[in-house]
Image (cartoon, rainbow, N blue to C red; front, side, top):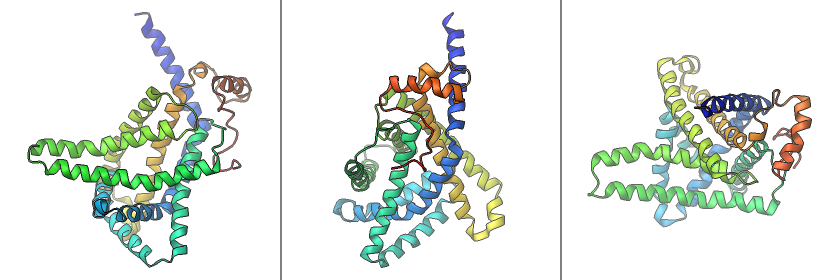
Length: 308
């Protein structure tokens, strides 16, 4: 049993290091920045995804199913109101010119670029991707992403249409599907977005914790909105707007916390530092990080202020 006190001691050191790392990286500020960018890019990104799906005959009718699935399972409490608003917004984009649609595409790219920048900041990755490679990566996400989403909806509809599957199994499948999607999304972000090698076990751990936090937050947020309708009393019919912003902010905070957990698991040599992220610590550990990974460096620049 000698290993147990050692494990507890190591875990406490890790929690201390993780808290200091989160405070240093200003996750609350960055989550607000990402929420703002998301709200600006959400309609353009949705428009691009639905347009891409409509070009494929097999997935032409999957757009409405995707919207219903997302707002029902990932936007608690105010999902129906927000969905009706987005339906109007997306319908208005049909009146736009080619130049306007081009700006929508650029806005969608802005969100993906911001995700890439913030996650690589958390991993202290200083290695820059070539602009051509970055653009091709973002283009792939915007073009292949809708195909995978549409394919998953079509497969789900096919599975539920099979007579050999019981109603209980179908209900369990639909209940597990949002959890599986959120876990897969977290794992993909933590495993493939950082511009350095991430261990699979670390990405799985971060995705698992982020997924649990997301599900708990979704239930808790829905209870809060329904039991304490503060926003509805203040904003009335416009209450869906601040509710959506708060929820998107909370989602991004969870995403960034999961990223911090994943990144910090790969920095075990720094867990025992007594005063992490202080001036003396910073000078001493910068060399350690560089030796650990050639793509790591210091974290003195904020993701939204560092030069391209």
